[in-house]
Image 1 (cartoon, one colour):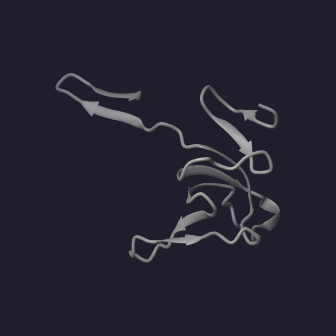
Image 2 (cartoon, rainbow, N blue to C red):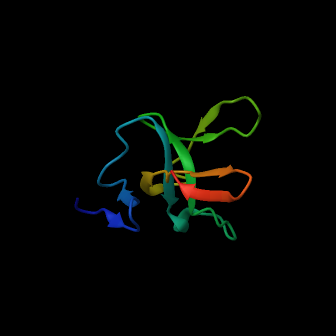
Image 3 (cartoon, rainbow, N blue to C red):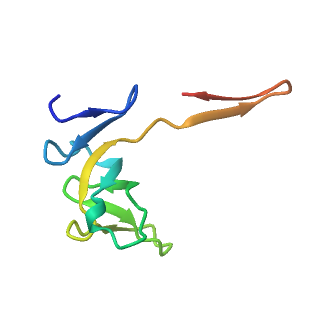
Length: 99
């Protein structure tokens, strides 16, 4: 796919100029650093996508989400979130392995 940058086995950054997510859900996003305030290090985060807008947790314990102002924090690329690690233990060992 043109414009997709491979950064690993199962991860691909997709520029928003090429394509936006087709499904609602959580995605890893990369934010244009030129628009961040000085000393702000938020370049990659996990945000929601509602089919039209990027969403972030409102952080007020209301279980709601706020629409991200694309003029303030423009997303330049997105990717599927990585699979989590499954951790389990038994008498002999503790194991960490990818799902």
